[in-house]
Amino acid sequence: MNLARKISTCIGCLGGGIVILHLLGGEALAAENNGGWRSSYDLIMMWLNFIILAVVLVKFGKNPIKGFFREQRQTIAKAIGDIEAQKEANQAQIRQTQRLMAESAAHFEEIKEKIIAEGERKKQAIIESARRESQLMINNTNFWIERQISNAKHQLRSELIDETIEIALLRLPQALTPEDNQRFIRRYLTEIDALMK
Image (tube, rainbow, N blue to C red; front, side):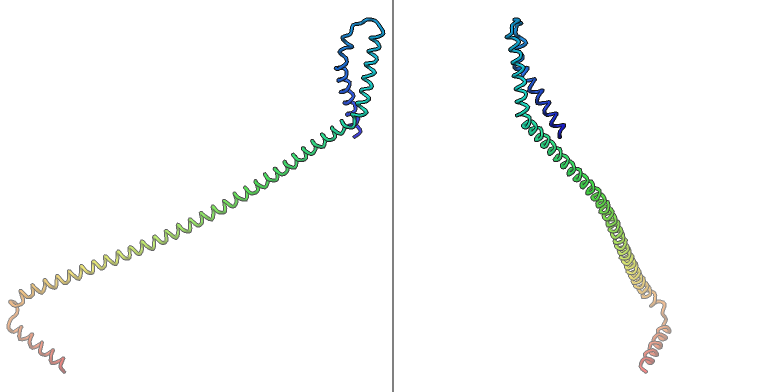
């Protein structure tokens, strides 16, 4: 703090001296050398005024200048502190965002695996259902084919029987003799007697 006070005092003196030299030094440098006492008196009075002004500036301007620099230092320190705090907050938010992104990626992978597993399970269920339906269709088709074959066999048998009966009816009267008729009648009567007993 003492060093800052010394620096601000030196800066104040130098600044004041430079301002006075620029404001008042032009006449002294531009004056002609008359060789009289008046030019020396003016020069001495100018330096005396400069010293008085410098002392007044240092005496009365030192505290306001120091206050100004102190206030500026505090303002800058506060601004730097605010920026550092904002930087820390931003870094914390970045870390939080990165953590959330990592968790989100892990969660996404987990959901993806669940979706794939569910898709595989549904695919297997669909395949199994299609297999059952195809087996059912094959069984129905086989049943229908067997039924058609059975119907065709039955119809063929009926047609063969009808054809055989027609052929038998055409040939039988010529092939049967009266003894065959007698034999059939006796056999028929025997069977009836056996049923009656």
